[in-house]
Length: 399
Length: 89
Ligand SMILES: Cc1cc2nc3c(=O)[nH]c(=O)nc-3n(C[C@H](O)[C@H](O)[C@H](O)COP(=O)(O)OP(=O)(O)OC[C@H]3O[C@@H](n4cnc5c(N)ncnc54)[C@H](O)[C@@H]3O)c2cc1C
Image (cartoon, rainbow over all chains, first blue to last red; front, side, top):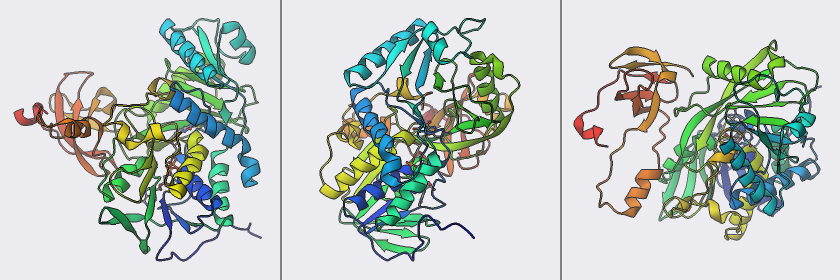
């Protein structure tokens, strides 16, 4: 007997109150919280399948130890929503809050961590700088005192950080949308947006035209292509980000370990595999193919931290597309000059952890027409106004 | 995807030797105003398809050049050395 599908399929109607483009965590969470607010005539249109984009390709790190007050407050809300998500959606999303360690290998790195710890503590986020003796208690396998090129001087310790099962999150939200009366349409690609008199009128898809007054762009790596359909240029460039996974090992690593100096991060999943990643590729591209160069770099740098892993095999590698903004912060809100176009984009290499907060606040914005204060700093207009929310130091390697 | 780039000076080399300089765009006049300049500084064409772009051969000849690439497949077309108009941009 085949299992019951988690959400139903429907004919595409010729009109909806709200059309959300993109079936990743941001699109699905926005639709879910809209339906929870009573706006149930909502369709999520996904070109491929739920989780095809970054939401099915990320390394699932969830944390809130960011750098700016705006960023910290926002991601903190998301961590809190994630803590409740299994109960909210009646789905085990396997959120393991086993701690997150950002390593510093030089004095400048240490002062950067101290600055972040102070900011985090001020906003009541559990985060502090610890030194090698304490790091060793948390991660005995780490090469702290042996020979190495980049000795570890300190770490930013963030106990509530951890990893989650990303597939479960998107499936649970998709099922939640369905249960609350919304619709999820896979293999439904948006090919145009019709605009008249300064307002959105309809979207065109491979399954026909859909009238709507409200369109939400939640297409991450593809955000520029959608926004261009409505004539709204974005400060976004799409870059691949790669990751790989090893064969399963006996559990030995509780915390997520990140080293910006070494351009590598690693965590161990509940299945025992090590998931590792790096910085994004430095050229723009929409190609989803991985490179040998990434694998060599990630392995080399991981062995600096954990020489004991020298004989571990890599099982597979992959890439996903990241919608990079100039300040490593997202763009959320209404388009400034086009009525009915909303966006939650610019999620770059770090947006999976933000899905619940962005969905929750975007739904409030669409339902009430008022921008919730926590969204205000992330408006598209911040660039021209020179009010960037600089998170590069806290997000370029630790996603 | 890893790929090779045909440098006008050095021939075919792996992409890791190069620095990506972004899509070729027209630079506004100095007096074009804040709005135009903010647009130029921040927004990106970010084309999913063939795009003309700047590349810098940092590991060898240190030359900037322009090449067209399909950003979906990374297939490159032969490079050109920029003309003086573009070189200002
Ligand atoms: C390797 C890797 C590791 C990462 N690690 C982390 C991490 O540890 N922690 C973290 O917080 N973040 C991480 N990220 C970032 C995170 O994955 C993304 O920011 C997040 O998943 C974006 O979610 P989204 O819902 O906005 O978009 P996506 O999940 O990318 O979904 C967008 C969807 O839009 C669809 N679409 C595109 N065009 C159209 C169209 N024309 N019509 C209809 N649908 C369309 C796509 O098919 C896609 O499914 C990582 C990303 C990668 C690639």
